[in-house]
Amino acid sequence: MATTNAYDAKLTEARENGFPELLAQKVAEIATRRLEPSTAPRTFTVIYTGMGEPIVHAAGCSHNVRDSLQGAHTTEDITGTLEDVGTQVYADMLDEGSMSPGDCLSYLIVKPCAR
Image (cartoon, rainbow, N blue to C red; front, top):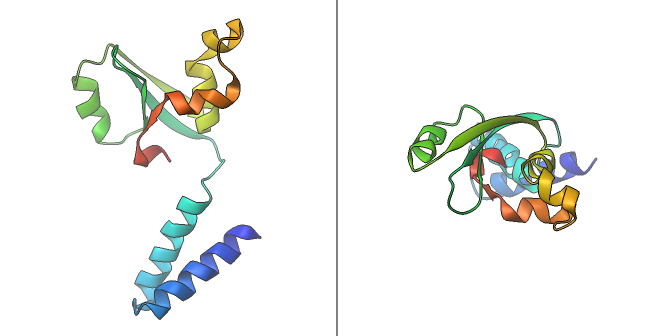
């Protein structure tokens, strides 16, 4: 399994860099999550600012409020993967053929909490 191999490699690297065992395990866990994002459905909050691209946060993120106060017209909670968020946000453009499904994520501002 790729996740285990990536985790083991990061754990070994953290140990070699002198991290205490519990901290090395946490470092390996975080690094592995960054290498292989989860495909499990999650809830995201999409903030439509009216200017620029929609902003995607993890639901419940404390920065939602800050970004919402900066000129947001509407917010929407979407449950699924990031790809689901992109296809739902840009459904009209996908239907008319002016955008391909692969382009959807590149037009979203995905904050670190949502990755």
